[in-house]
Amino acid sequence: MDYDKFIAEQIAYIKDTVGDATAINALSGGVDSSVVTVLGHRALAERLKTVFVDSALMRQGEPERTVEIFAGMQIPVELVDARQEFLSALAGLTDPEEKRQAVTDTFYSKVFARLVKESGARFLLHGTILTDIEETVAGIKRQHNILAQLGIDTQAAYGYSVLEPLKTLRKDGVREVAKLLGLPSEISQRIPFPGPGLATRVVGEVTAQRLDTVRAATAIVEEELADSGAFQYLAVLLNDRATGIRDNKREFGQIIVLRCIESTDARTATATALPWDKLNRICERITQMKDVNRCLYDMTPKPPATIEYI
Ligand code: XMP
Image 1 (spheres, rainbow, N blue to C red):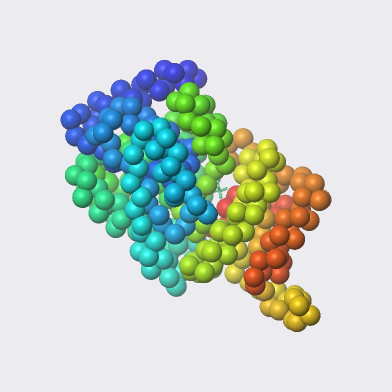
Image 2 (cartoon, helix red, strand yellow):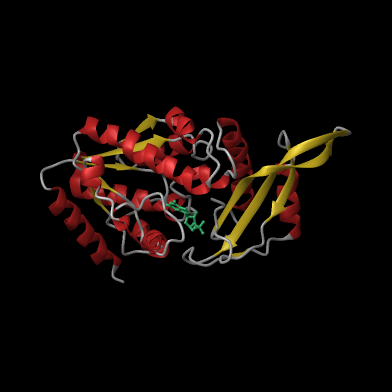
């Protein structure tokens, strides 16, 4: 594919579609929404408003760091604190699809609808990629960001039209475009992180406390595996406990799963053959966390497993 041509075409598409109106987009710091932000900014300049919604489901320091990176590229990003709204919507839910639905609804119907209304924007730029569409249409899962493909009329339901400039690309294509757009490697090479964030990595109820646990474990895993070259690595908090011993006392503690996979496009994946020393070190650090006394390595390929747990 000729990615320079792709970039020129998408900028023209955004310009033509939005016309004299204004647009808004949500930046998550991932490569998809970052590429959309730069394309949109090149097409519309200050007529594009970019927001970063802190949903309480992000990784450690992620909201602040993302705003800082884009500020360095002269692209202003507004940080919106919606943590309490997401936590309230997720309270009491344990079913995976209900949790995804709650995140989608809170994002689109509440937080984003409000931000769009306040901004006066009639267009929303979104980083949907081809794999998201294929898996949703195939009924494998309801992705966070698919609306039109499910027959949902966003204009009628939410009051804005959605533009999806990346919907013909897979992840590897998006990374190529990111490089050509001059995004730093911290973004263009960033491992995937799902739209519903850490909610996909908490089995059972998503609470502020359980999110803190999985966030701390994620920070350890990302630090330890940053130079692994793996496609994606993550930590999951199970909804189960196991007996252990700490300070000579019996403890019924929490369980963290380590997942590290090789893949080219996330459609299929295999577990990385991590060195035993590395596994030991991660296990040691994870089980030093308060109330966590087991760390398991997930060796399951996709399929039959998916990469995330929800
Ligand atoms: P699964 O768990 O389906 O994940 O094997 C495949 C890839 O997609 C990411 N993922 C998502 N990305 N919105 C996204 O933008 C989502 O709802 C979503 N769910 C999963 C996942 O991290 C993996 O890279």
